[in-house]
Image 1 (tube, rainbow, N blue to C red):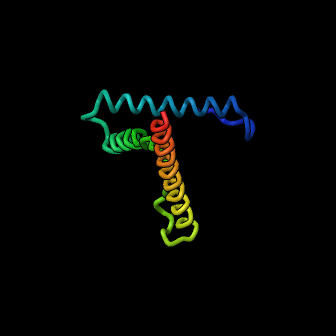
Image 2: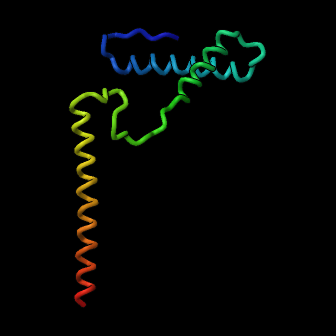
Length: 109
């Protein structure tokens, strides 16, 4: 049973058509599962490829600090890497300074 659209944006009729199409796909899929040895090769390949397409989900990974596609010679990248290195050095110096201050306080006590 096909349903014709009355208007271009008729949402009910569009929804009905989508449901009919989905229903037909599910019927074909059930037939493939029930009668896998007598089903046409075209239908088998169709649903095997659909399964593979649906199961291919990218694993969630955290964003990389350095984008692989960027050129290393780019001035912006070099500057960014230098800033990161400077921040690390400042942090190391700050930690050393704090250790020295603690050591002086212990000696005074």
